[in-house]
Length: 377
Image 1 (tube, rainbow, N blue to C red):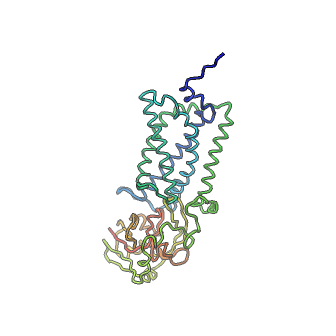
Image 2: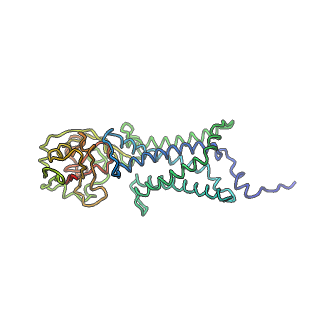
Image 3: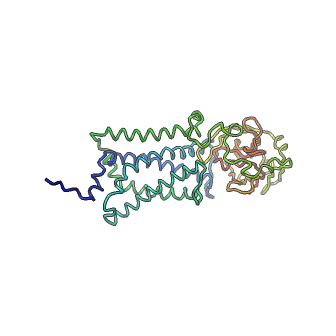
């Protein structure tokens, strides 16, 4: 007898991929995990974005002190752990991308476009996010803007996809297979890969595991005075100005009394100490003991009203974050300082000498260094 080969469409669509690891059950479990991961990243990413760029109606609280440290650490470390999860999901479902014919109807065409947006958006977010925490920007666009708006596209596509596939996922997951050993081993391997990534990164935000943070771009204890630095005084172009013996901190704007304080004047004022973290948007954070003048005490000296907004300006001449806004909940908080010392020693030049802002529950880019002016608006 002569065996007639199966049609090419059938080979491409089914028979060429007979492994149980390409079936709907594996894809469903990986999809559930990815959905939870991306939802977590979306929520924590919005927190980070709106803390850095709050709309006029939104005022963030100053407590809990470590809120931003936790949410941004979860955002970045969870995002890194999602990479092996996404790769496993793509490997499981890629046979469907090779099905023939590629489009069977108008509805099927829309479904495939949606899947393309979902895959492309996922890869874009994870790849560019990885580049960002590595401080490497080989792309021509501004990362925060692109990352923010792509998140909405990705989540929108994910919601539609989950709605479209939910009945199938529920049926598949609730059905107990008789031959699930291979699937279970594969899923456990994917989980272990994500766990290893987490374990070797989480120390950048969780101090007890700092020694394991071999994949972290910044490590606790590495840097001037034992603290990491993203931008040095030399890179900011403030080396000369920060060492100027005629330095004055100006308190101006809508005040009853303008102030112009030298470094000696600041050191002569009542000092206070607070234990606060530097929590960076790239996910790393490090706690330190800061000593300096309470911002609220300085503003009370100038006769500032309790509901004023404050703009902190740096000696730095340019850059997106040479200024930052401090709302009433933060500047009225007794933990918010214009720090003059860190860990018992005068500030290193790279940590903001002669004076820097340090406040609870704020992104590191808003903890302005080399403070030269406090403007009340």
